Image 1 (cartoon, rainbow, N blue to C red):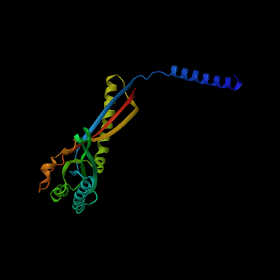
Image 2 (tube, one colour; image 1 turned 60 degrees about the vertical axis):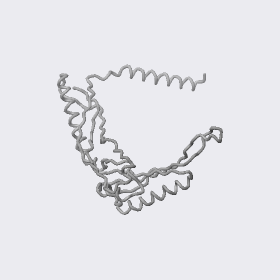
Image 3 (cartoon, rainbow, N blue to C red; image 1 turned 45 degrees about the horizontal axis):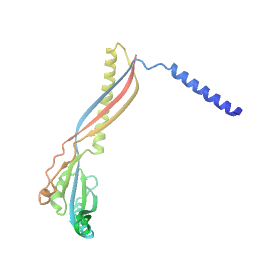
Image 4 (cartoon, helix red, strand yellow; image 1 turned 90 degrees about the vertical axis):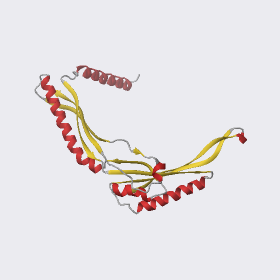
Length: 238
């Protein structure tokens, strides 16, 4: 072993020894309290989310695709008449075409393509729920697949700061109360995490066949979302 290799080995050994000594001498945390606190509020959901779709099938793939494109283009043309940024936003969704298989006795029982089936979707979202619900009666080439409401970023941010401040106040108050019960006079924050979210039920499902022949506006109710802020952390009791 060369002198350089010996020096490096000695240095590694010394660093390892110092780290082990430092770790051994570091006292375990004492009088540390871990806890969490949360606050929440209800907010009216202000964005309507509507998905319209249609399904076509047939023996020729190009013909099925053409039918889907025609139905989607007609729906788009009608929806664009009401489009307004933030109030009624229109976008295309899933557009898919896939084969259907079945066993063919003439080919020794092997599966073969017997037809094609495809789906096209149109998404309409926005704050003008009345206009969006009335749009259903104006589109006859697509039917309702899903409809629901969500909370806009602006609406969530308006209350997020309020519930976060309330959750922090509860965290500090709970920490001080617990510390007094343990016989301590004060606390200091060691580490803390703040999280917020809004909770909403899943989107409602509608029967596409029953809505396809409807000539009336879609009855809807926005409901409320719950915005929650949670504070998790630990404090040093003194």
